[in-house]
Every structure is written in structure tokens, then in C-alpha cells.
Image (tube, rainbow, N blue to C red; front, side):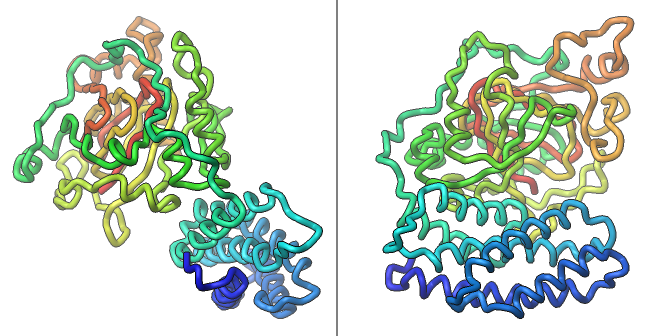
Length: 452
């Protein structure tokens, strides 16, 4: 944050940039045939009316009304993104319009704020302003405006939402100990291979099969000076007022599963809920899960707490049992996500199209794996969940019996093809694309996945 630039001056510069983008993306949206999707044509017309009527950068009597208009357009853009059926080529411009509209709306809050006004605002006002920006980051990635978004958040936090007095970083997330031995899934009898600090050549000899490198990440800052096991540190690194996407429900295959945005601090408090250690996994806060989220994009300071292993840049070939493999399409050919949940959190057996470097940072996690060619015996769901199995590999209630609904799983996969491992904090698991895998958190758990 540049202390030499006043909020008003900085906001006007930012709004000038946003106004240019609004005009650009509105013109692009106008280019689509309105007969294909009248909703898009109406939305483009309303955006044009907004930008023609008033400049975002000038203080004028319409400024307050303009904020209401931006709220309405942001909601309509989001609805269009969610319901888009025709003109899917318009999606990139809708995403950008939603992004810049959310940013413009929150920047106006800062521009119009008068600290001397008798109509003082409270903390919820500023949390709402940050929340709009976080919503834009989460839904669109905010690639073109990330610096602006992060700077806005820093200014609001610095002036209006200062951190509460910190407690010691050594105040760790409560770990729900399960005893020295973690119950292994009955649907696997073979342990995953373990390699001690393999060279790159050794890795190339084993990249066709899963293996664990024990204690690989124990020297990461996330496990030392910047401990992710500390709610105090995690709150400080994000600052106040931040929102994150949370899965609500024990299993995304069920109808009662949903997603919502949740305050980061509130999520951490729920995560550290001190549920009784005798509670069944899946009860209490285990229905909340931050899953497959680009947390390092949203909280850049956390990116410095981890290190990308060299194995990720080894450019592995397409495996013989997954010949359609291609690396991620971004510039780095790398996708990094965070996974945070309490004891008992389960990810059902599923497949991903990339090599996976999976690092356990906080708590323990049990992983079940099986090779791609077992797919016919995994009873995958149809259509959108075709990469997800109907089999509950951690269940003890579906053990083989004559009326079992998944007999081929137990006769073909379990006896010799399925593998299992319980990752300890600092362990790193690497496995190829197309492998079936399921996860179960044995404690409060924070993990990092790197798809390559």
C-alpha cells in the first residue's frame, strides 16, 4: 500500500481503469446476436445506459443511485453466468463484467465515504465492501484486476478493519486424536510405496505409480515460522472481512449438499470447534469443507509459506493406462489448490485428469487409491459425476455379501489393486492422472494439491 497516495486519489485512478473495462466488455456483449439470448441484449443495453448516464470517477448527486444500479447489474450478470445456455462464447465477457461491476461498487463505497459525516458506517459496511471483491475473485479469478482488488482490501483492512490483538502463533488448531493407530479402509489391503528423497531419475522410474515421500515438507514455512496449524496466523495472513467458498454437507453426491461463501474467521472457529473426540466422523463441523480452492490466489501471502517441488516440473509423459493426459492449460501448466476440513471430512472416490502432488500440512489424512483400468468395477455415476464412484470405499457397512450392490468392486478391486496410506504432517503423495482416489481426514486437516 502506497502511503503517499490518498484513498480518494487512488480510488479515482482505479475507477477510471474500471470504467474503461466496463465500456470495452459492454461493447463486446453488444456484439452478440440478441435474438439468440435476449437476456444478454437487455443486459448490454442497461450497462450502456449506466456508463452513458454518469462517470464513475466524478462526485455527483447520482453517485448513491449509481451504487444501487451497480448492485443490480452485478446480480443480473451473476444470474446470466449461472443460467447461460446459448451464446456460451459470451461467458468470458460476462465474467469480466461481473468482476469489474463488483469492484466498481466497492470502490465507490470508499470514494463516497466521509469520515466527518454524522452518518458513520460500522464494520459490517466495510466487510460487505470486501465481500463483494472476494466474490469477484472467487467466481472470476480477477486475473486482470488482482492488484487493484488486493490493494483495495489492504486499504479497507488497514483503515477500517484492523486486526484484533494477536495471540501466539503457537496456539494450534485442535487435533482430534484418533490414537496411535488410524483405522485403515477395509477396501484396500496394499500399502502405497514409500521413497526417501528420490532423485529426479528415481522419480521418472516411478511416475507410473503412486508413492509417498515421508516428511518432505517439514521445513516449509507453513510448518515452521508461519504455522498453518495456528488459527491466529491464518487470521492474520488473510486479515478481517474475507470470504471463502465452503462446501456444506458430508458428501457432494447427496441432494442436501450445497456451497456458500463464509467468513474466513468464522470458518476457522468452526474448524476448531472442539467437538467431542468420541463423536462419529461426519458429525459436527465436518459438514464444512474448503475444497479445491485457489486460496493462494486469494491470500497471496500464504503462497510464500509453501514450495513447489521440482518433481512438478519434470514434464512426465501420458501414462499407458491414461493416454489422453494433457497438463493444465495455464502458463505454468500447474494448478494449486487448498483443502481444509475437520476430522471426518471425506472426499468420495473419484478421478482427476492430471498428475497430482499432494502435500499434507496439518493433521493426518488417509488416502485410498486404485489404477485407471478399474473404472468398470468402480460403478461411476452418470453425466456430470462420471468421474465419481458410487462406492463408499471407507464404509464398513458395504462389506461383501451376496446382495451387495457393488460386487465387482469387491471381487476385482479390493483383493490386490487398491492401495492405502495415512499421510502424516509433512508427507507428500504423488500419483498419476486417472487414478481413483478417496480421502478421509483423521484430524483437523490442511492439504495442498498441485496438479501438473
